Amino acid sequence: MQVTETAAAGLKREYRVVVPATDLEARVNERLDELKNRVQLPGFRPGKVPVGHLRRLYGKSAMAEAIEAAMRDANSKIITEHGFKLATEPKVALPTEEGAVEGVIDGKSDLAYTVELEIMPPITLTDFKTIKLTRLTAPVEDSEIDRALETLYEQNRPFEAKTGAAETGDRATISFQGSIDGAPLEGGSGEDVPLVLGTGHFIPGFEDHLVGLKVGDSKTFNVKFPDDYRETNLAGKEATFAVTVKGVETPGETKIDDQFAKALGAESLAKLRDAMKERITREHAAASHQKLKRVLFDELDARHKFELPPSLAEQEFANVWAQIENELKQKNRTFADEGTTEEKAREEYRGIAERRVRLGLVLAEIGERNNITVTENHLKGALMEQVRQYPGQERQIWEYYQKNPNALAALRAPLFEDKIVGFLSELAEVTDKQVSRDELFKEDEE
Image (tube, rainbow, N blue to C red; front, side, top):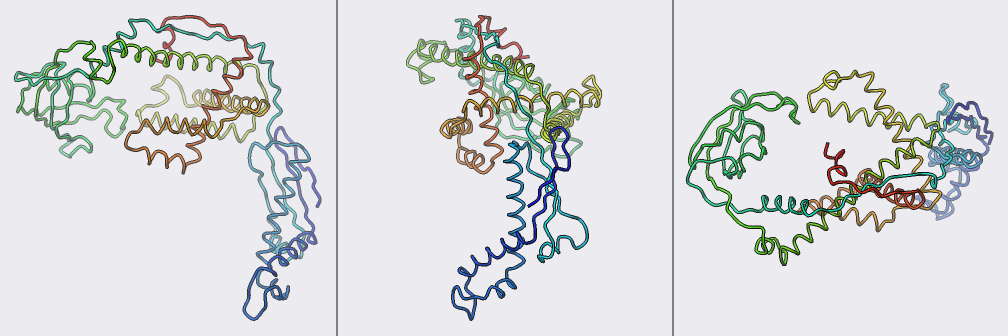
């Protein structure tokens, strides 16, 4: 076998490989010898089939296997001898001259092909002990627990039947039918639907028309879908709704006390407050972790500069750009509406894509050098958490992840990132800074 480097530019390499026809013939003969002892053909005893007869029956398929194996072995040898780590799969180009491939298959010509490789760049990791980070923390105040209890109260407060007209805050049970230009609105109808007026659960203006109606009242009115409505085919359109009020209830009075707590399954109000505090503490910890992760990744990005594999960068940009275009389409907006141009947006999001690729390579390098991996048990635990978020659909969600490697990889990625963050946090100089709850969640809420 003869291997010649024909091109080397940046992270791309190209080689011309020539495998003698005699080597391919040896592989074919070896394969036919294997078949001789395995195949059963009419008129021949096992192991007694003449090689010539086998060649007539299986010669071309054996040669195809030999060619594939020879290319695989040659490519593997190139990668191993040069110590390459590939960014993408090798790209093989067979000769295009008329009859060239047929000549190889017939055993009359050497196998000559070119293989293009795109390799990973060498990455010099920074000294993690020189990284300085500030970790924001926020204590759980009693006022935050009080607000959480008020929200819980609003979600679980009782309603009592009312004979008068519906007011804001009341719960109306309605049946409705929507239409646009006289045609029924798909998904725009419902029977016995409970709706607390003033919550904004329906499109703007819909709930306002129900204020003042009593049980048995019917009303037809027009409302307009928002211009940025998520379903672009409805955005900005005016719809007509015919509504009948089936019931009106007013919020009942109750207290946030032990009885309220017991109705929610807690032993007492004190225990319910403890549970709320524990939940809020976890939320604070998660927000603190995400902020630390963000500044750490900024630091890693700033400290590691190297050439990116073009294919990886281009693939990530294509994914990002497709998402941006899809979001604009759903919102029925243009780049001009966003205060920019397509050219500027492309430049901005290409930078984002390149950052993602760079950080991905750096994190992978850190993980490889320090034996940091996501165990199957860890992944299974995360998958179970994901499944629990869909009560009644656990089996379907579980099967979805099992059948979709990309979905499972998307679940594994943040787990791996978190392990890297934990590892680096032990090495870096991390200073805790106590802030208010509002400051801790400020960027996320905005």
